[in-house]
Structure formats: structure tokens, C-alpha cells
Length: 166
Image 1 (cartoon, rainbow, N blue to C red):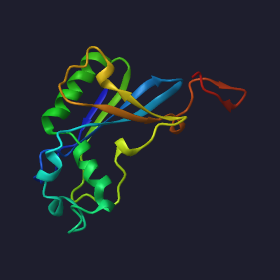
Image 2 (image 1 turned 90 degrees about the vertical axis):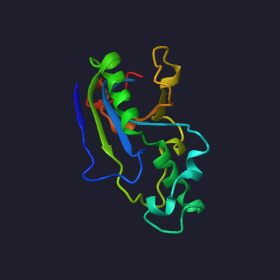
Image 3 (image 1 turned 180 degrees about the vertical axis):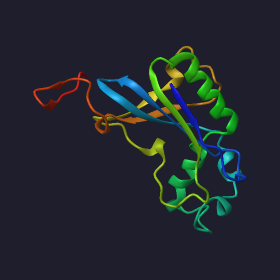
Image 4 (image 1 turned 60 degrees about the vertical axis):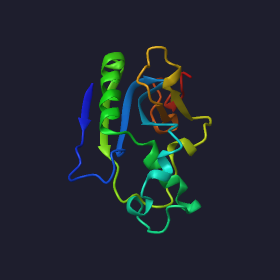
């Protein structure tokens, strides 16, 4: 399992600033499936405590509905310690199943108008890994993983046509 951690080039405006993703070698009939990890819930006091004018690319958008997805992108991010705990957990429990783990700081200021991962709906090929349902997941903070199977090659290909073993 390859692990790549991109360190911030300078100081970050807040501690909650890291994105984490992983690539699963084989998942639901597809190979090399990218999964974007995120916090799916947080303390309601976190959002009003942040200086959104300093964090968002457009000033004065801290309370605007158009910026709600961008605010949630920040709230879904991990702290440095949470990132390290997630990577340690993945190494301990899934090292043989993962191709890679990647982490980098999210870019600040955050553009307005983004869609948060938690706002994406599940469908035929898009879904979530609910880590809180895994008995050995005991990190103490909420983590989910978003995947889109349509973005990945199926494991089984018949007569030149892509078919999935789902």
C-alpha cells in the first residue's frame, strides 16, 4: 500500500484542513476504486465558530446559502491528528486491500459554490462506505467514504463489453 501525504506549504488558517482518499484494489466488482473520506457529522457549534470571511474565496459569503456547500467542505475535512488516526487505522485493518492512501490540505481560500461530499445522493453507481457500521472502527469521530463505481473498470469484462460482477 502506497501512502502519500502532502504537507502544507505554509501555515493553514484552521486546523480542520486535510482531505483523505484511498484506492481499494477490488470493490463491488470494480478495480482500483477511489474513495473520498470525509466527516459526515460534527458538533453544531463548529460552524458558527469559524471565520468564514477568512476561509471562503468570496468575502461576505459566510452566511449566504450559496456558500453552504463550501462551508460543509471545510467541516467535512480532517484535522492533522484525525488524518493520522485514519491512516493508521487503514494500515492496520486494510493494508492488503488498499492500493494507496492519499492526503493533502484543502486549498484556502475555499471557492464558493462547491458541493459537499455529504450532499451527494446515493444512486446506481454512487454510494457511501459507512465506517461507523464496522465493528472494529473505534476512532471516536464520524467517517464515511464516497465512491462512484462508474468511474472504474469492472473486474470482469465479457466479449469486449464491460460488465460488473455486482
